[in-house]
Length: 426
Image (tube, rainbow, N blue to C red; front, side):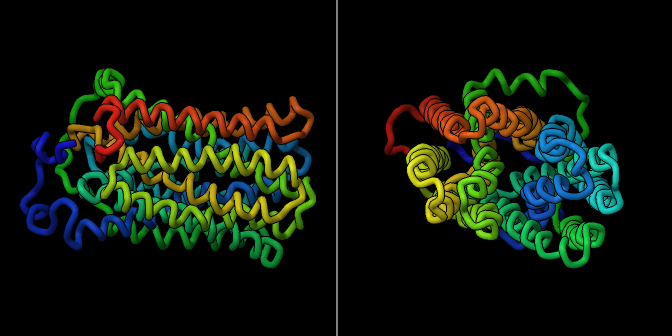
């Protein structure tokens, strides 16, 4: 692929030209640090939904079914992604400044309101809508800004940025699990809110776009034209299938381990192990992707995810259901393999996008499609679980099959871009 800057004329101010260029300089890597803070606070916070499911079932919302509670929590990743179709256009027109500021206020305000909520509708509004809406503003702004500063090292930059969500997925559940019994729900949420506020203030001071944003009228064609490009369509299908599969193990690994007789304390840490293992899974594939080809590395990581699900999780839990070793090894390998999704998908989108000034809209369209998979993947797996009277092999097959489909669509996209030769760096 030719470098993006050779395909389009990007308007940059004199100040921007002086302080940094693509792939290099302190300004570019400062943006990476600020974007890292954004993903730690946004996607990292969403990764803590498991701790809330258990807490609400036993405390504030114990009169509601587990399914009713799960709708509050499943709204978080849905809102985080679905609003991209609007936020992307706002970013392209006006840049990240106001999106970051408003997003910070909404995210922190939502968390503070969770801390004083007592009724179902209050949790729904604060945790299901307000907080993830603010998180989506900072999440999508961070990714879009990163795309404007990098081309040759884009996958590595996105890998470092997305590692923030992995570390957040380790820190927030671990912190909440220890704070909730000792200081209570309210102050546990407030401390989390203050940590997020501090990091997002840092992000507001460091995250900016390299390009000069020029307001354009909203046109339907801006949202539909990407679907006329076959590589974009295949990337959307591959990403949606991957996100159908990705959240299933994250949502059900802990409860399955507990039902199979694994020590309760150990089972509770499986999601932490998974998120910790995804940290190198975010950075290393990005580094290798810039060297060996981003589609090549993504295909390899998705293939590894499918193998781990279908050749380890499925047979391992059927043949040795109480084995803690199976769950630990699976969590480590799956966390590493699936970690590539958050960092590599935006890098792949940037690679097939000829005009960086429209990256916000294209990213918004992609993440809006992904949001549907994020919202429905785990409920579909839950319906399969109920249909099979509590046996887990059905949802494991569903997750593995979706990951195999993701591999197929990534291979198809690569073939459209560069043919079938496996020697090409794509």
